[in-house]
Image (cartoon, rainbow, N blue to C red; front, top):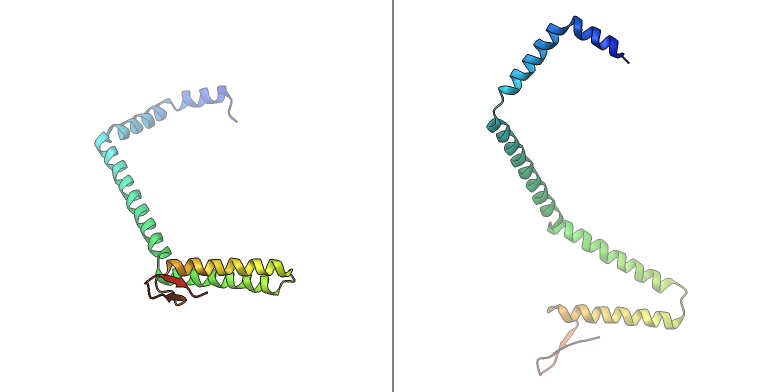
Length: 133
């Protein structure tokens, strides 16, 4: 680390060079117009906005792709089927298995109720729909 004396000595010996460097630096800053600087900032902000919009648009298109959604839905259904298989194979008391069967039945009925094309719906003559389960 340089001492204060060494710095003073260097400045005294190179005063003309240091002043010339400072003058050049000042002139380069004076040459930049405020409008030019603002224009650069606006251009950079516009570019960031466009790139961000493009990124989010591409992300949205990717996530909502029917092919991607199909795979996620298939994986979810397989996961639930796996949980059901575990529950069926587990050494559980009968009252627990009966409770799980009731939950499954209620789930099927609820999904059939909101699905107009549910194959398990039975149409009554009065026009009301009821689950066939």
